[in-house]
Amino acid sequence: MFNHITQNWRGRPLTSHKVIVNLIANTTTGAGITVSAALGKGTYPTGTRVSDDEFATVNLHRDDFQGDWNYSVLPHKQESS
Image (tube, rainbow, N blue to C red):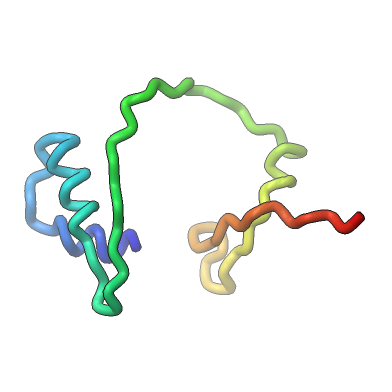
């Protein structure tokens, strides 16, 4: 969706969080997909480190084309019992 969002706000000054959220929320695709957006006003810690073991548990599906940049984060695989 990022390409559609950036096309929607192209040429518009991003002057405030409200403007950015509204531009994102008013994005649609030619296929009729819409976007919802809200500003999260929470505080989030910086500098959090993720160990290699923790990262290995993330279910990433890397695209064949530039997989370091193009990937999907999928739900955890359910272990069968």
